[in-house]
Image (cartoon, rainbow over all chains, first blue to last red; front, side):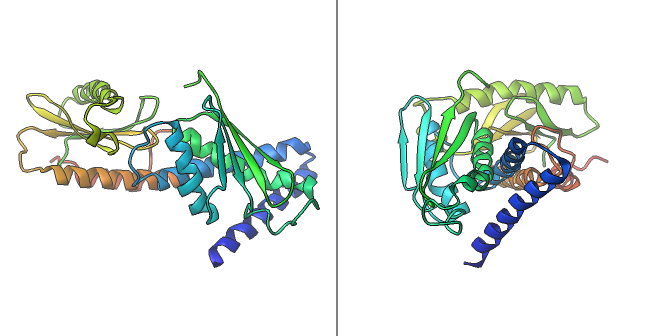
Length: 160
Length: 139
């Protein structure tokens, strides 16, 4: 589908741009990831508003997570999350065995050190969506073998 | 036709509030503020009326002798409040629902505007015009 490729190209260029402008401005490496994540955060907030416009109200957190795994992931990446695990105490682990934004990079361990850059935007995207739905969380991603990756959400307690 | 329309953020401060200017505006601000309690009550009602639990439209919040107050909450916990005159009996439930729908659509557009930071006051002209079309025409 044409629209999928458009976003992937834009996303790749976005990462190249942020890193190139970092080199010229002599920013530290860590700041680029933060910048990408913050971009994703703002986009996530707007996206969630649009997606939840017609859905009924969510009963609890698990409902929110299921929505993220099914509807949200399908709308953005055209596929569902493959596996969701939780310890029922605020930690959720989502597994995607064929993450769309990584399939073009490699099919194994090559370029593994560059993978974090490509995951930052999506981390922010999910964090922004969750925060707009009332769930403050920290989102991290792990890749061991491309293109499969794992996302962990840790819900932050006691913060309104 | 509404007399007052308000958009209240998740943290219960107003993002946008507009009322017919001929009346005492403070009275409307106060009415909207007190209706927030009723909204909270409806949203957190557990195991009561199951039908309402999954809907975004909250319906009539409470009637005073002059006005009726309707509420609507989005999934991102932003509340819309519409105040109409009690004497205006021609307004049916469906019309109120469609007013809320238009508000929600317009609000979503504001949210997706990259120049708008979530949590700021809404200053979009498009949103203003949608609200004006729903308010009683003041002379």
